[in-house]
Length: 144
Image (cartoon, rainbow, N blue to C red; front, top):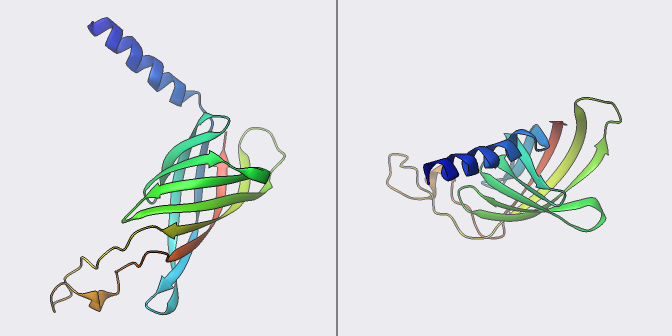
């Protein structure tokens, strides 16, 4: 039984080793206490098959192929997110593939402010997120 477990583990890890990998880096823009706030975004995505990716982009992220080259995104950060992304430019070179993409992600649930700013647990730090709040992310990606 141990041999079967090892073989299954090696086979699973091998699928990720030879899967398409896309590393992204960019900026995310969202409402921050009534002003436009910006933060950095970093991610790594593994192709499971031609239509599905699994990875990390400031939280667990699953991507499913959508219409016209778009990708449906389901993520879990501080709260679950649902969104779409579109790769609007891809490099035509060999080796590392370069791309530029834009994603819009909507928060699906309310998230309370969990930081204690010296006055108790309240929205004084402006970390609370309302359901329906969204962020726009612009990414530069490198993949192979």
